[in-house]
Image (tube, rainbow, N blue to C red):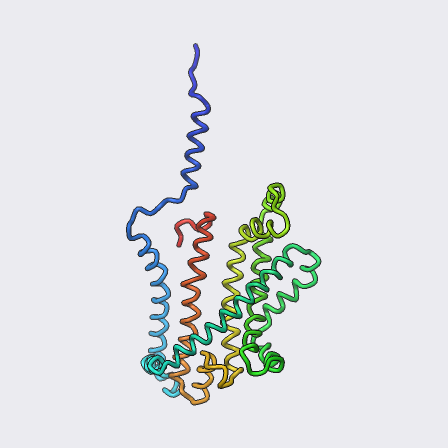
Length: 296
């Protein structure tokens, strides 16, 4: 007795359609999905800040330290508002961000070139790899005395400290990203005609983007920290006030409310850049590669 079997091509077609459906990102049907996603990324940091303020208030209420050493959150807030009214806070934030961004952009160029050289040349990696890692470990404030001697009390001195603080992290980030690229990708790129700079632009950099972004993210953190260390020491009326210089002025005057307000401003600006730029960019890249799903 003959047994009829369905065509094999239909089974293969159904299987391919099912796999394609699994790989296709599901678009949210909720009209408010975007707002919910933004709210979900904003409220955890706000909650953490509220908890810290409550601990601060409790320490103040328990008189763990005298008030001239540990002011209340209300005093720090009033000092912050005074700085806003006088325009000092806005000007300091603008000057610091300008220095940080200029130094960071220079670091991105240098770190990318150095990271690609570390990834592509085994001799360069063996010779300079440990040195780059050592520079990453070295505290950025150690460069401040040398920068003052070389460049004087100038913006160039602060930019030098920022560059020395951020470049090693970016270089190691792109090196790690390139190391994680499957060896098949460069071979396929060569077969398709991607050689030299074209291979770096169209194959290496896109494939190493998650690791590269992690290095950029860490590089920004080091750049911001390095700048604050430089501004605490490099001071001249001709340079204009930065947040680090405002912090040192408040320390000199014994204004602990101003010190705490400036520390919070430094923390807030760093977190704001992270949340508004690096975190969304990283989520987008990971989601496009199917590495994130619906976790964030």
